[in-house]
Amino acid sequence: KVGYVIPLWHADTPFTEKELVKIRRWIRDWLMAREEWDPEDPSYMIWHGGKYDLTQMRRDFGVPVIHRQVYDTTAGQHALDENVKALEKYGTPIGGLKNLCAHYNNTFYFEDSDFGKDDRANMDQVRFTNEDFKLYAAFDVQSVFAIHEQQLKEADHLLFGDRVGYRDEMLRLVLFQIGPSVHVFSQMEHRGVPLDVVHLAKMMLPNSPVNVALKEEEKI
Image 1 (spheres, rainbow, N blue to C red):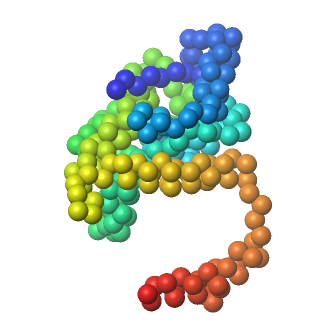
Image 2: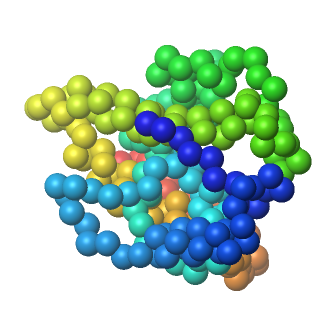
Image 3: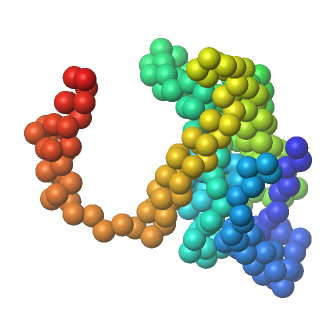
C-alpha cells in the first residue's frame, strides 16, 4: 500500500486556499456518503484507535454524521484473541500501534528517526522538508492497512467450531458490533453527552441493580 500525506492545515502546504477548500469538501462529502453494504465487495474505513481520529475528522471537517463502517485494528486484535488484554501484566502491551506492528514483524516505530510519536503535538511546526516527518505520517496510513490484512489472514487459519476459517465472523464482529461503538464514543467526545452524575454514582454502588445482576450472572 502507498501512504499519501496531504497537508491541509500546515504552513508548508503546496495547495492554494481554493484547492484546500475543494479537498476538504471532497473529504467531508466522502465521509458523509451512504453506500449500500455489499458483502461481496465490502467498503469500510480502517483505523487504529479510531475514536480519536474520527473525533478529529468530525471537528476539522464539520461532519455531523459519518455513515461509513469502521474496522479498528485494536478491535481486530481483540477479535483474534480476547485474552491478549489479560496478558499485558506479564509483558509489553500489544494493543498500541508500535507493538502491534512489531507483533507482525515490522519494527518501523522502534527505529531511530528525527520524528516520532512524541513530536506529533508540534507537527504543525515541523517543516515539510523533514523526510522523517513525511515518512512517519505516511507509515501511519500504511501500517494499519498492513495490520488489517495480516489480521484477516490470521483469522483464515483459526478454528471456528468444527471448521477452519473465522474471517467472515470476525469481520461481522468488528464492523457491526465493535465498529458502531467506536462511532458512538467519537460522537460523545465530539458533542458531549448530558450525564446524571448522581444516578451514575448510584449505579456504581456494589448493591446497584446492575452490579447485583452481574454478580448473579457470574454464578451461572
